[in-house]
Image (cartoon, one colour):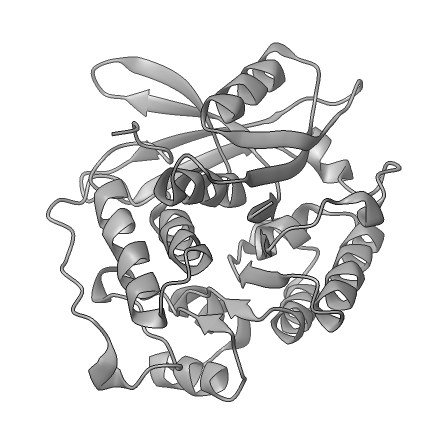
Length: 298
């Protein structure tokens, strides 16, 4: 595969002011996989690894993923648990609020119910986030990090990571910090957001985050700053492209996820750091102009 993304997908029930409720499917790493597949093009080999149930929503998700060209061969079926669900609504500035029904979702047992990490297919890039780590059982989390460390040690793949921090998903903040620290030691493609890093590690500001990431040797690195545009410690500030602001902000739900998808698609195409940053910013600018985590395909 070009990219194997790992995480949780949920049914997204979105309230539309004029149309009632609409059902779709989303989740941070799944959103990234879909946008990467769209931006890469028809030859993309993008896979998704998770667990779902045997309920109607789970079957509808599998169909939707296949329609996006996503390989679902690594999606496990759980006879006892169902797909997670969340509702989302946005205010008039595009900021969103969520309510979740996911604590007993099938994805919570990923890598804890007999699946072998060694059976994961080869991929150029394995992508996951801190949300992926947070939903796993602690032993499954440790096993996944150890497996990825082994893959990177053997130069078997690149590991891309986003420290997407959601405090309510973790046992406590210290476990979250320890797990994310370990992943930053394993990963060679860093896709953090300034806000997440400050919230998790207490950096006094953006410059402290930049300095911390500049101290490591990355194969690729994009530090997301929302409308200000991303920065990379691999480029001089003067070498960064200009990032035009989004013409219209309707819904910021998947801004970072779509950025990651565009960035990774450009990376897989062999583009340089500046073009990868620009590719991510351009798709995120489009995504925030429409409602929903996954906007309609053009």
